Length: 232
Image 1 (tube, rainbow, N blue to C red):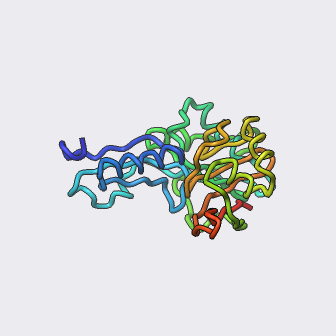
Image 2 (image 1 turned 60 degrees about the horizontal axis):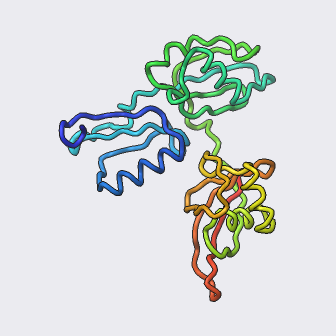
Image 3 (image 1 turned 120 degrees about the vertical axis):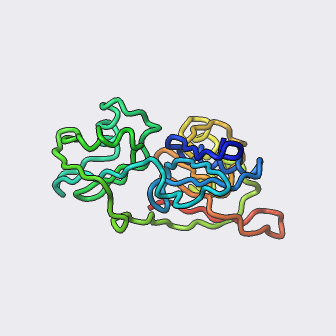
């Protein structure tokens, strides 16, 4: 529609796996007039905008999303689940909600414009009283902190990469995967031999979350040098 009828179109909020699929599809059809945006640099959940060749003025400002910031006492500690639950209680679907940035004394959420009015009407999250306002302070976003893990793996099989990230044997990594304790880019998998890619996020229950940052070369024994970052 964007290419043939010159109409700009937007998706609902997509998770990280869906965003990566979008990028692959766009590359396969050689379509460059698109943007994935979640309201701020580094967002995990984003909307897809596909626009015609000459319709790219202020694309970011045109996304149909609204940021809402909730303020509350600093001694109150509502978590991500509490905010998501309050939104779902309004009948808002998950694909209408982007990132939820929980902070000390304030939390910002990104929602589709069609849901913003209802979200601004929230006065309680769980048992905690909150005040809502439109907008958010980009300076309040904390960049994630990482600890780098480097080493060599035989291949980019999930069990190989996970074993390096967790500093455990491949057998133990395989057992975690088969036991349903591992997700790759938010999708649970029990396939030990599935291939991971640079940019994938791997989470293992009880161990934390990891980012496959880079493949840095090949050793003289044909093993891959890779860097994995653990979220701190």
